[in-house]
Structures are given as C-alpha cells and as structure tokens.
Amino acid sequence: MPPLPVITGLGFITSIGNDKATVLRNLHELRHGLEPFVFLDNPNVPVKVAGTVKDFAFPTTNWRDWNWPAAYAIDRETVRGLAPHGVYAFCAVQQALAEAGLGVDALSDGGTGLFCASAGSPLLLGQHLSQMYATRGERGNPMGIVSSIAGTLNFNLAAYYHIRGAVCGFVSACTSSSHALGYAMDEIRLGRQQRMLVVGAEDMNTESILPFASLRALSVNPNPDTASRPFDRRRDGFVGTGGAVALVVEDAALAHRRGAPIYAELAGWGQAGDGHSVAASHPEGAGLREAMRRALADAQVTPRDIDYVNAHATSTPAGDRSEALALQAVFGGARPKVSSTKALTGHGLSLAGAMEVAFCALALAEGFIPGAAHLEEPDPACASFDLPRTSLDSAPRLVLKNSSGFGGSNVCHVLRRVP
Amino acid sequence: METHLPLSTSVTPPVDLEEKLRHLPVDARAAFRRFQADGKAADLDVVIFAILEDFIPKKTGPALAGLPGDTPLMDGLGFDSLAITEIIFFAEDLFGISISNEEILKVRTIDELRRFILRKAAAKRAA
Image 1: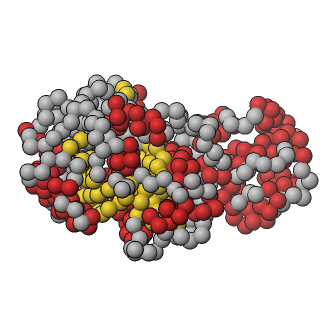
Image 2: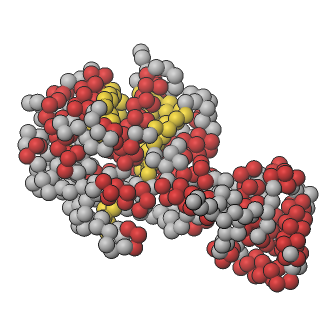
Image 3: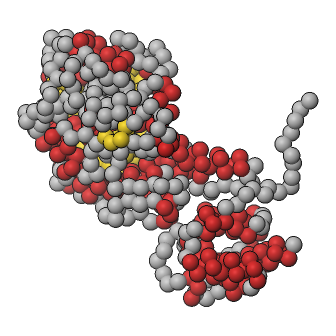
C-alpha cells in the first residue's frame, strides 16, 4: 500500500487557546480571541484590535525579560536564538509531540523531517539592524541572524531536536505553512520520510502586524466582537494575530504500528498562482479556483464530496469576494458548509494555513463544523453558499482548506475523516 | 561636493550601562560601580562571574565562582563559541574595551578570562 500521510499530533498556541481542549471549546462555541490593542502607544493609529496570544509576555527584545507558561521547558541555550514566535513554536511542538506519543529520540533517526513557515521576526531584525547602525558595524548580537530572519524556526527546531531528515523553511506569505504541509505530505507519499513535523508561527506584535495597515488591509473597526467578519457585507479588513501551530504528520502504517491517535488523513493538495498582482488576489479568484480543483483531483474526490470548506477569507473586501467567486465556480450547485475561522482568531499570516488545517483536523476528529462567526449580512457574492451561523454537530467526512497569499499564491488541502 | 560621516578608528556608541547591568544580581551591580571607582580586582571578579552565570548556555552545576580557575569554559562548562562571543561583546560595552578575534581564541579557562578582562579593563581605567 502506498504511504498515506495522516495527522497524529497537534499543538496550539493561538489567540483562541494554548491547548487543544481550549481551542476545541472556542471553535465549537465560536468564542473569539480578539482584544483591544494599542499599537505603539499611539491612539492615532486607526487599527485598534488584534488576536492576542495570552499567557506569554515579550516586553523587550531581551530574552531575559520574556515569560511563557511554566509547563514548557526552554533552556537559555535555546531561547537566546529565538524570536517571540520561536518561543510559541517550541511550546506548540512540545504539545504536538506529547499528543503523538513521541519522545525526542524518535525524531533524530533520519526518518523524520521538519518543514516550517514564518516571516521571521521584523521586531528582532529591526533591533539588530538598529544596533548595527548605532555602532557603525562594530557590534552585534551573535544570535541576531538566526533569531530574526525567515528560517529562524527551522534553524532552531532542527538543531534542538537533532532532525536529520529533510529540513526546510517556506516563505510564501499567507500560504507559507500550507506549502510546508503540502510538501511534507509529498515527502511521505514519495517515501522519502516516514514522519514530518510541520510548524507555522508568527510574532504577535506591532512590527509583524501594523505594516499591513500601509496596504489598507487591516480592519479599523474598534470592536473586537465584529472587527473580523469574513464574508460579511460590512467587513473592512483583517485583524492580525500570531502564535504557533505544530502538526505531526506520519505515514499511516507507522502511526498504526505505534498505536498513535489519528486525527485525519491528508488526502490531497494543490496549488496554483494567480499570475496577476504582487499583493491583490485575482478579482475572480482564478488561481484559487485552479488550486481547489487540483487539490480535489489529487484527493480523487469531487466538489459534491466536500462537506465543509474552511475558507481563507480574511475579512478584506476584495479578498473575500475573490474567494467567494472561486468557490462558486468550483462548487456550482454543490453546497458544502463554508466558514472562515479567522473570524475567531484573526489572520495568522504564515501561521494561518497550519492553524486552520489543525482546526479542520479537530473538526473531523470531534465530529463538528465550525460556524461562520460574526456573520450578519452575507456578501451577495456568497448568496449560493451554506454559511452556518453556529457550529454544527454533524461530522464532516471530507474537508477543503483554502489558503491564499501575496504574489497570487494559492494552496488548498483536502482532509478526510479516518474511517 | 560629497559629504562623509566623520571617520574614527573606534566607535564610541552611547552605552546604557544601567540597561546592560539590569539583569545582573544586585551584588554584581554594586561591585561594578566599586570597580569603576577603585579598580579593585576582587570587585571585577564578582562582575565577571555574574556575567558568566548569565550567559552560560545550560545552567546545571554549582556556582561558577566555586570552581577551579583552570576549568575550561567550552569543554568543562558547556560554553559554545556563540556564548563566548556574547560575553565578549557584553564586556566590550560594559568596560569600554576592544577585544580582537585573536585575543578571544586565547581565552580558554575561567582564570584566563578573568585575567584577560582585568588587564584590558585596568588599562582602560588607567587611560
């Protein structure tokens, strides 16, 4: 039997919870994790809300001032090379490995690889460059590069866990961790690796979020209860968030031999570019449309087989409309349930795809469909969709997860409930 | 006409000593101020051991001040080249000294580090 990638471990540090039980409850009850947030202590900044990560504190760029939950062991040798999102990631990975019943020794035999996604840490990069300018190049933090540039997650996690399999970082903005997961699936399907750790993470701070205000991409709605409302007619932009999510993906045969819990099968994935704009999505979602079709074909299923679509929809006027048109084109008369869990979490950028695939895995394993939170007046482009306003206690069998990013990058995943 | 930033052989960036010392224990901060005033080696030792304790990659064994002076930093205590470099940069800022790569490579033990920084810091004070 050919290798079949399945998810056997999940770890969450997110705005809606820092453990599986809390995330599950908040997803099911549609409780969001957004809070008022003052950027740069400047009340004139029009963006007022963020998807905050609770129980962590990074008051300065010096790791000696950082705090994270005591349950997670991160020694000084490790933390000195981390960005804030690296701290999130180490906590999420520890959860995921415990869930999957894997000890540290199991990761270093060459059969396990590690694919990560983050945009790096603009906060730390800015701080290191400021120091370089101030000293005219004569001083620097030796850990400045490995803690701040894109790749910091894979540098640190691979070293700490002695990963000897495939190690790589993926940078495609908001499709980054979806790419990481797709290529991780392929590593297993091609027989190159038996197991992959996939990690998506982002800092949750001004430096990672506020630059998107320059694109007019962020919501200026000051109400955390409505600032993120994907597919709603009154949506006005996304709410930024950070955190980390880790997934353990294994060949099903290995998972069965170990007696590991299996959340879901990764049935297929597909990607396609818009070929259109550096920042804006194609107005009719051309690339996303094709990516969905490729993912469905890879999974050998049809649109009618899909019970639930976890949309990319970030709550921006243009992006949600493009996705709605792409969904219409692909699904036609088929009416899967559609929601975007970014209404609850905010948009996690490089983290988003992994986080939302993990939500889909929970939905498949626990037998529910997350509702479309904060949706009151659906955009007319969504008229043909089934957008449940509350979570449904009906077990989906097949789920489609969409992701889109800068440069018109689109990645889709199909997940199947374990028979 | 082209303009250039003023050239100098060595930078003298403003160093916020309070910020640098903030994470060291109270007794080490007091010892640093005494060393600045009196230049006594015993005070500098307190500061150096506090720095070593702060930058050691894995805090496992007993207090470093109680170990034999010939204990190797790298093989004996688990310091790696990154941590040594962090200590050097920290000491350069704190004492206003400059340390070359060649000099770093010659420092292998606790005593060698103590003597090296004492010599450099004392010379700086004398200047």
